[in-house]
Image (cartoon, rainbow, N blue to C red; front, side):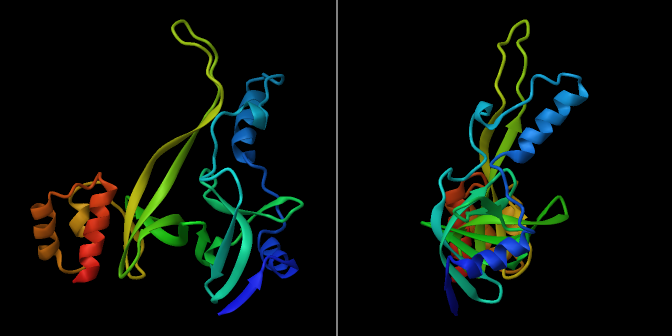
Amino acid sequence: MKKYYFSVLFLFVFAGISSAQAVLDIKHAIDLYNTTKMREGDFFKTLSESEIEGSPYLNDDFISGTLITTTNTKYVDVPLRYNIYNDNIEFDTGNEIQALGAPEIVDKIEMGNIKMVYVPYSVSKKINRGFFIIEEEGKASLLSKPEVTFYEATKPAAYSDAQPAKFERKADSYFIRVDQAEAKLISGKNDMVDVFPDNQDKLESYIKKNKLKHRKPEDLKKLVQYYNSL
């Protein structure tokens, strides 16, 4: 495997891929809010980054990490962080913050004890691509997808105080991916069996015997481990 350190080469490859677009921490949320205000004629109440509570990031600070591409090239000691709101990986060049403009070249990312992949996934039969945290890895993998929602500031009302604009972290969503198929959302108890292409009778018995619940990540992890042992 080719290995590179965070250097001019890294900047050439990845800054070029991202069209050299510097990403402000919460640019999209601020633009959305300010555009709305301008359409309402409220030009003097635009939003700045310091006025938004919460965070769009998995970790606010950059973590020295490793990025492995689909061509098996490995970049090490790269300052990385995951922007949940934008569903993208950002890296610090030392002068500005860049985002990966072509995340499909990513095979795996490691940031401290967190491992992430960029894979296809399906929700309501619609297929997208996105970043996921690896919770369990094997023939079948359990993946979690962090969720963040942006709320605009609200004015005081009769029975409520004014609320600042904020990012609010939601419960993670969990997906199971078998081999190279798209990851599938586990939203109900039937999904715990239907997501797997084989050994469904054994899985049903295992779920019943161990009283596994689809809402419990630790139960989903046990189920994936059991499947991988068959």
